[in-house]
Image 1 (tube, rainbow, N blue to C red):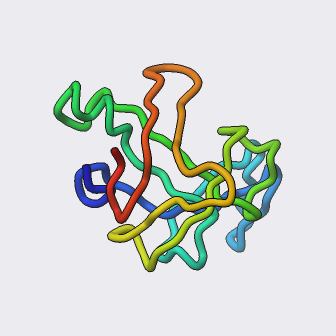
Image 2 (tube, rainbow, N blue to C red):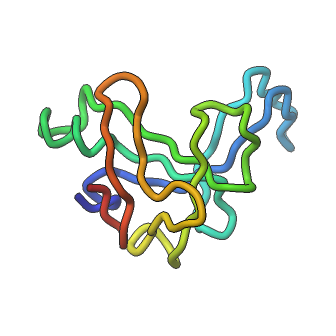
Length: 121
C-alpha cells in the first residue's frame, strides 16, 4: 500500500519535553510536528497498513511512527526500533540496513512489514 496518499504518510520532527517554540508555547510533554522533507525529518508517521486493509477507511485506524537512526534518542517512544531512511521523499522511502529493515509493532494489531520504495507491506 502506498505511503502517500493511501496511508496519509507525513515526515515528522521530534519535539523534546519542555521545548519552547518561537511563539512562546511550551511543549511540556513533547511530541512531534509535520515537516516537508526527508532531510529535515526525524521520522515518518503513517496509517497502519494492516488495520487500514481490514477496516477499509481512515476512521478507527491507528498510526505508526518510525523514528530515524541518530535523529531521536532511544528513550523516546515509540521504542526501541530506529530505522535508516533512504530515498528522496515519501514516494520512494525505503528502510535499509545496517539495523532494522522491517517494522514490528509489539502491541495492538502486531503489524509486521517493510517500507520499500514508498510502499508499506
